[in-house]
Image (cartoon, rainbow over all chains, first blue to last red; front, side, top):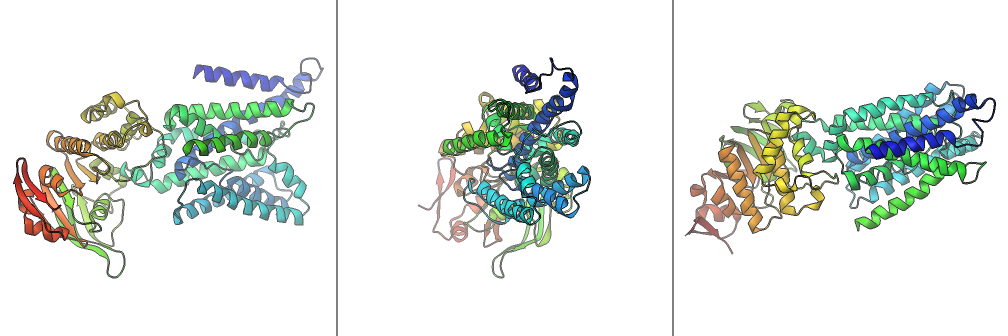
Length: 305
Length: 251
């Protein structure tokens, strides 16, 4: 745990120091540092931890190792909600956009869960495929409306999750996900029990439906906010919990700190690579996450056989 | 005491369970037997409030299962279903720890830890307590689940076919563990069994179901009779007095 903390701290410091602008040499270096580097790094920490934990909670609720907000359509729903506000009331404050994204993510995720309960899927791999298809349909609807209203470009920029635009005055809403992170820690045992199935949870006196609702609500809040501020962070919630599970098992109470740390490290490393690989330009972090995520996803399926 | 009065669950117009009236006395092991589809598991699941009923009432130790808060019931009875294929990776000790959830809401006290250790020792799982469930054999895993419901420390324990997928040795061991839990810990155990000879040897009461109705209830000596068994199971069955007690022969 100490080693994990040190590695994470090291990455955070690196993230603070890496960049095109010479923060030590230039006259307004300190100001620049405060305007972009700190917000960017805080955003990395918060969204990395939150999305990784959301993935784990979602996997517990669905009892499926392959789901996370981007393989169940949750992010696409959040995007649709965001787009709806951008079209209907373009001048709305950020809080309205976020609320729309959160509500939309919640509805979309519940639709997905309702679908899962109605049909018995023979293979656990089918579940994320259905989710990705559902997300594809929702994404297509978003694209259609964006095309109609000349917003395709902003939609495209938004979809490519990136920390480039995270500057002072933009990242503060992410603080809300701290609440989500804390709530997940408090309800850790409930989610573990839910992961053992409805009958198991009922046996020990838990209200399974309430746990699912709580989990979905927390996931929707975190996904909605991260989506609005940063964008799409594909596969993060998939790879991190699965890697942690291999080494530390699934008892949320004891493995949540690890999930949070590994989530932060993964996002930070991907962001650092994205920032340096084609410097002075940047590659969106979502691109790198997709590459890493796809490899881990396939490795998981192969390992399971 | 577990009391069922006019319990009914309808599936289609001609397939139904009940109406069932039954009193399961406190203490000892009560085995539910019967052919496939007789409604044994369904009845057990309804007693364990995992499934609703269409009519009737069930009380467990005086608590009505349909309107007592689930939290309260979790301290009175525990139920283990037969399919437990978790994707969740937990160690044996972590799983057994969840048995204490109704008492501690997840914040395990020293007393909880002691009871967890006792349950683990009771089923001889001491060497395995830090192992993950997916690394265990079927018999070891089944023992871990039973340790969990014992750690729940409830007066009533309901088990749905706990001998499923166990070989001869492990089945016998499991039944001995359960018998010991009934005698030493004073639990009332209700268990769905497939093998009538296990029921005849280890149970204190046998409850026979057929077509969703109770066709016989009594001590093993009363139920282990050729005519009774033959009509319950639709198979010619002889009962012989074996070296270790009555034995049903149907092969």
